[in-house]
Length: 75
Image (cartoon, rainbow, N blue to C red):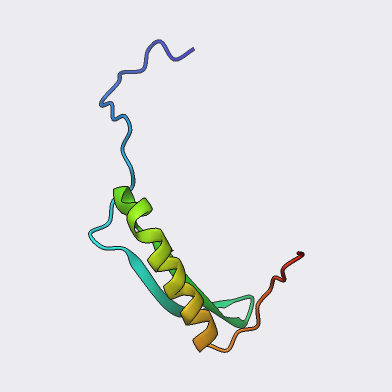
């Protein structure tokens, strides 16, 4: 079926790359409503080193915005 296709290039094991981690808040409009979005991505190979600190920053941003938690403990 694909025997006549030329392979132009091969890349294996690559991750998406950013110069810096993105951790910020923005307002987007979706279906006519303003929604607050927190972006937290781009950790790359440093994810295990930085994810706890970034997660704490996200929680602080949510609290600062006065957002009610959408979850509750079931213990």
